[in-house]
Length: 318
Image 1 (cartoon, helix red, strand yellow):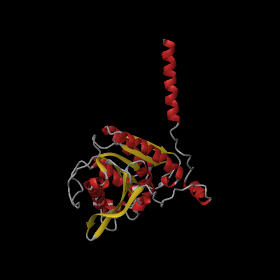
Image 2 (cartoon, one colour):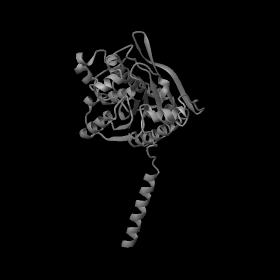
Image 3 (cartoon, one colour):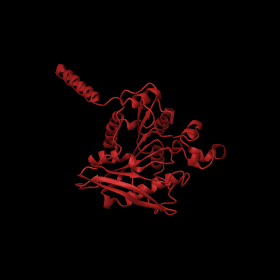
């Protein structure tokens, strides 16, 4: 009998190891930015298609207005399966690029890939720093989530299962929105301050989380985002930092950050991870050796991130 039990335990361990072995490892990165740029010039860096065609089996609605501010219409895109029958979890994607420019089309590939898995996906346009300083962009993203969930019946959204995703300053906006979602903060410009949804998960790619860091201020153009230099508004920079809003009931957080990121130091993500762990918030951190800012533009890194995002969403979006 002992022999049989031992054999079962060993077999179970082998199955467990095999299952773990099937998980992708961090793709081999580069020594530094110079070697990465060389690989790009030589055509050895396989990039994703940022403008994929929409498959026939998906609905893709573009440029839906969710908010009008001082005559400026803010828009979003929505994608979901045509054969959708029941409300599905909502994934909201938020682009970055230093708060000053960018395009909601940047994450079209994510919208399509995750809609093919049965999710309702959306990509949000918000006011850049040229049109509004902090907290304008945070208000806009929070309003967008509210608009989407207010229209949950029309777009087949399960408003009790919402996740946010963002890269760089888009990751910043995802974190800020997620960590203040249970408060009345940053709702002043929304059509409604009704909060009738649950953010269950947030995914952050290399986001700045402590805007009092001088290097981060310089590299992310935070002064334009805040509207004042740090030496005149230190408290405002603290108020604009996601790490200062972390509470025990915040949504589980998935973090990806590359070790050769020369825009947002990897220490920003490590600080976030420590703060979340201290507060008791579930956190998963992927330290991407040899990868830079905007690393998910590379196909191998994109595939890696989507694999673990899928696991993460499967775990926390019920």
